Length: 219
Image (cartoon, rainbow, N blue to C red):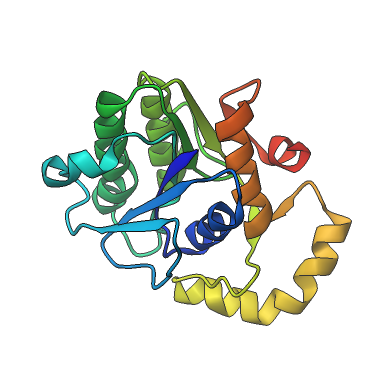
């Protein structure tokens, strides 16, 4: 299986990249982003591309891929709705529409979040935008598309968040997280588990397109 990862330098993307590189069934891992990952591996091919809204110059490098794991996004903190929409909706759809045109026989897996608003009409800005993004992705002609809505994610194996407030959160509460996971196993997931879930979806699919924490925990 050949996979494409967006957001491979972020916390979730780092975990997904690690699992893909470790998986013997994954032949080629392509990362697409504005900065290099800093990783080196025989299976890894990096595409550093500054404009994640336009891909004409790199389209040939995006062919013959079986799955896309979309882990790219931004926190709503400090962003206007227009800014948040540009990053989390427009950029996502620019990538997905390009991939659907190049190879509709691909599985697209999108990391959304618990609380996403599928109606697109709620009061919470980020939830509306994420819901709009999910709905648009599900309308594209992929072989399959899955929207993942994880709750609390525990970073493992040296994975770190790029967002300062999240790093502080994990430093302060880090020692408690393993215990909380034992108490609430269906509410918390690790970066390792999330990466494995995404690989399983690409291989075997799932009974529904939107996966809440209970679905992720069962997988």
